[in-house]
Amino acid sequence: MSFQEIQVQFDTGVDRVLVGTLAATEHQVLFEYDPAWVAGGLELAPLHLPLAQKGFRFEMNRLPDRVPGLFADSLPDGWGTLIMDRYFIRLGVDRKRITPIDRLAWLGCEAMGALCYQPTLRSEQAQYQAVRIGAAAHEALQLFEGKLADAGILLSRIGGSPGGARPKALIGIAAGGDDFVSGTGALPEGYTHWLVKFSSARKNAVGPFGRYEGVLEQICLKTAAAAGITTPESRLIDDGSGLLHFAVRRFDRPTAVSRRHGATASGLLHADHRLPSLDYADLLKLAWTLTQDATQVLEQYRRAVFNLFVGNLDDHAKNHGYLMDESGRWHLAPVYDLTFSGEPDGEHWTSYLGEGSRPGRATLLKLAEAASIRKPDAVSVIEQVQSAVALFGHLARELCLPQSLRRQLEKRLVPTVSPT
Image (cartoon, rainbow, N blue to C red; front, side):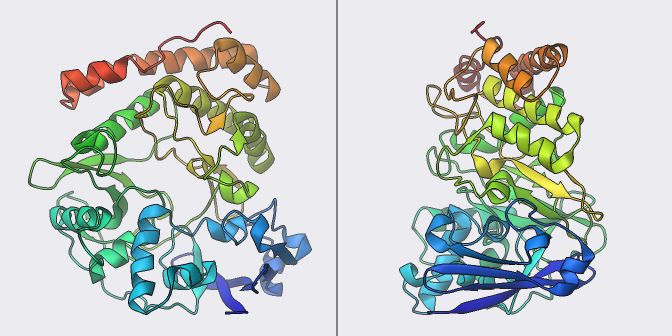
């Protein structure tokens, strides 16, 4: 189509307010705030879509996802895009002709975060459905491996909006922890919103560690908590076959009905998460720019040190996030997508003052100095992270990780760093 437009709304879970109108021609993207939203003063994307400017025009080929980052954050990555593409193919739409606005319209009000897109291509879900984790995992993995031509109605609903390449779904979990329902909309009383990532019994189906992907992500998150990093609630779900799937409580859905606005570094900075486009110096500067809070800057530094020490190479621009409260104040979101890398000799997506492969202690201290973090504070962070990483073996044994895999990963950890 030569011209498309869609309304962007802000959905608190209680009411929806018009934010503005997003439109696209063949080569340009336009966005204009609604006057009432401007008057309200809530800055959703202060760096590239400031309220003071009101209207914007971008060259499409200069935007990593062909829409401004505020809206690109709503778009899923590999897994959600796979489900979405199958929907359009059923309608006879050539994949190459699917536009970002088509995708936003498909998401409608089931996108992550607080943004809502109207009109939507799908009817809004009024009822929640029971979910059997084992059946959902089996279907998702069959689709992921190309053994199914299309996702069923339920998986299309609960699996189409999350980011990341790994098969996953949005669910609600009852207070007792054993009942699961579809979790894209409001939940019944006593349920909370979670995201579950499916493990596979085979290696390389969803990652290099096969059935232990979920266990390792749980270990990594527990290690982060020991390092003093803000982490979300998480758990492992046994699907009845002994296969454990990793589930994390969603921080963009604090209650059964409410929604919270979030943004990634990729969206805030218009940085391409498919490329090594950021340095941790950029993230420390962003933390100060958004929050004006030195404790948030120190936490971002702590995360940088942690990613280095546990070998989390998957630290691209979309894996650093922020949340905004009702008054418009920003703070770091709880960490997410922490993982032990399957390629120990690779480089980080986000560099350390230009170094992508295991920078030394001197580089970490220079990074802290560049962000006006006091040296004693930086040293304290490094030591606390070292102590947390040393817990890996204990946590691995506690969660019954095979000894051979535990020893393999222990060799990749960085309990100390070189002086330089």
